[in-house]
Length: 86
Image (cartoon, rainbow, N blue to C red; front, top):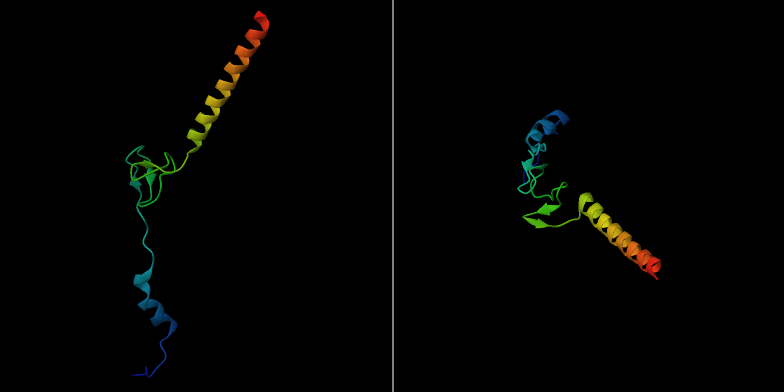
C-alpha cells in the first residue's frame, strides 16, 4: 500500500471537499392547500403527507374545541329551559 510523500495542506483538503457542501432545497407546493413545503415532509399548514391526514393542525384542534363548547352550551341551555318549565 502506498504512503503519501507529503502531508496534504488544509487548503488542499478543503478544496477537495468543495463539492460536498449541502445544496439548498427548493420548496414544492402542497397538492392539497398549495402552501410551500419541503419535499418528503408533512405540510405544516394542512397536516397532510401523500394525500393523507397525518397530523392535527391548529385549525383542526380549534374547530374541534369550538364544536365541544357549542355542544356544552346547548346542553346547558336545554337543562336550564327544563328547569324553568317545571
